[in-house]
Structures are given as structure tokens and as C-alpha cells.
Image: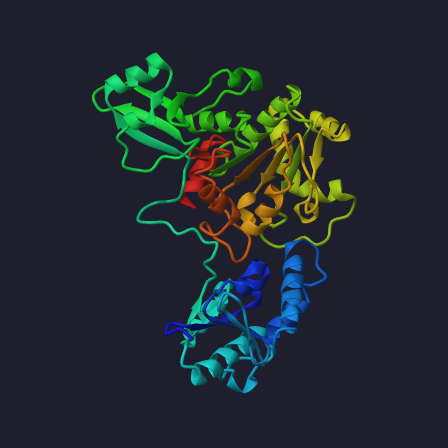
Length: 434
């Protein structure tokens, strides 16, 4: 047993968030309170990722029974020991309802803290649970495996970099149509498909480019003619370049409300459809509601999805003055609505897949979607990481942020953050001050 070995008590929220969390604590002890198994049992028949995760954990624990006794603890190859702990209701702190699952987990933590020489830590995605533990002097932490760790004042990968160069360097770029990256004196690390805003220290000369291999090359302006869209700022130019680049099958775009994320993606998807690049546009999104739920919706899948697709229809209405074209494309099968809950097992070939409101998805949900992409397809992840409605994730642990960070070194992926709102002055102001 190692000197720094710890005891981690896993909450249900962690196991439902990431099925692999059950064996993600090497060289430590992982405790699963009995009440957590009861809560998992309530999710095992649900569709989607929550049901899948609950079933995985149940099967994994059942397999461990053939190795050892779960009450005494079963050791894994990574040095982790997994044990199911009976709830000690007598150790529920005074004033707390012993029938509530969280309080029974607290009872387990209390009991183990008294008898264990190791540090006992409750791991939970539930913010209120962590606050309650802190008030009771029980050490509690979030599940950090997927969380992006940023250094200093870094706000995350934006997809662009501003650098200052000599006027001669700018002249070389315009003359040769490219510039070796080695010519730059940039302190920050540069990534493939990252956009460069180069400015001169001594004049108003500048250029916009994108990193391609060992060079910075110009952004193509011909694309704006084919999709009949005029970008209103440099970030939108970068987004259009990503969306129309056939060599980049994974694009992620973040930005404030009204910055043009959905509109640009739709217009580029329609352009690719008209140019026979793709056979269809597939639209999906997280089913997380803002505010209170309105209950079950009547009708078929299309009718059930209508409230969630209202933003998409608004963009069609803006571009074509009505939604007749949108309805026609759906009837012809050129636009398909694919609920994320039923996307597992599918393959999207020769398709332009738009995942709207991606910031409300976990990295595990987006992994499920991204791994559905077949040959000749492009997937576009859209979202505003400042407007997250899903419990247990935030601006650094949502799927959209994690994808942008983890794929920033890859040639097959590109990211850009839209920083200017173009919907209206009021919408832009509201996104900044509220």
C-alpha cells in the first residue's frame, strides 16, 4: 500500500457522468455506497448515455464478483481497490434526513473518516452536495478527469493568435503567398489550422492567414461568393474558411449569442449540398431545456423536435424570408433531424452534421456523436460556453470546450471563437452586462 493512498467515495452523479470513473483512481481505494447502487438501478432502463453508463457500472461490478468479495474489496490491475460500503444511518449528522441518498453517503464518509488512516474524499459532480460536505467538514471534490486546466489568464483556445512582425515580413507574405512559421518570433505555441492576425509595429500593414503545415497561407476569399454570405468581422471570415475547408472534417465554433454561429454553419452546409459535396444536412442538439420543463411533447419525432429546432428555422427565415424552403428540404430528405438520444449506432457518410448547443453536452456525449462520422462528412459543433444549462458541467468541463482543447494540435480539426455579436446592439449588450 502506497504512503499517499487515498479513499475516494464516488457519488452517483460521477458514475452517470463518466462510466469509466469507476476505474479511474489508480493506486487508491474507491468506495461505492450501497445507496449509490440503488440510484443507479433507477437509471439502468433509460435510453441515452445515462442508461448506458448505469448498465456499464452494474455489469462491471457484477464481473468483479467473480474475482473477489465486493464488501471486502476487489483489487484491479491498476492498483485500485473497489469496495461497496453499507450505509451507516447512525452516522448521519444531526439535523439531516437519513432517508436522503446524499445524507447516507455523508454517513459513509463520516464512518470511514473515523476508522481510516487514509484521507477520505467524496467525489461528486453535484455542487450543492460539495457545499453540504464542506459545511460538515467533509472533504469533497469535483471529478476533474475531463476538466480543462488553464494556466494564468488563459481563457482557453480561441483558434486565433495576434502577432507583431516587421513590415518586411508582411511584404514577404503578400509577395510569396505564404510565410514559413520559422520566420515568426512568437512566444506562444502555434497550432495547425490556427488563424493568424499579423500586424506591423511601425505601420498599418497587416495580414490574415492560417497555419497550414510549416507555413502561414492566406485565407481564400472565393468561398464567400459560392455561399453568398458576407462576413462582418475577421472571426466570421475564419469561421467560413473552416466551414468550407474539405480537409477539416471537425469544426468547433464558440461565441456569444447572436455572433452568427448557426447561420454561418447552415449557409455553408447548404452551399456544400448545392455543390454535391454532401448528400444531406443532419441537425442534432442536446435536449437540455432553459428553465422549467414543459413535459412530454405530442406527435412524431419531427413534431417533438420542433421547439428545439426553432433557432434553426429562424435562421432559414432570415436567409430565405420564410421557412418553406426548410420544410421542402426536410420532405426531400436533404435535411434530417436526428435526436442525440438515438444517435448511437448510426453512421453519417457524405453528410454535413451540425450539433447545435454543444456546450450542454458532456465530452462523452460528443464522443458518441463524433465517432458516428463516416467518409466524406463534416461535423460542426456550435455553442456558447457562457450559457450552460446542464447540471454538473461548466465552461471548463463541457464537451465543446474539451473538444476544442484536445483537437487543437490535429490537422483534421479547427476551432474559432466568435467575439462580436451581430444580431442586434441590444443582444450584444445583454450578453456582456447580464
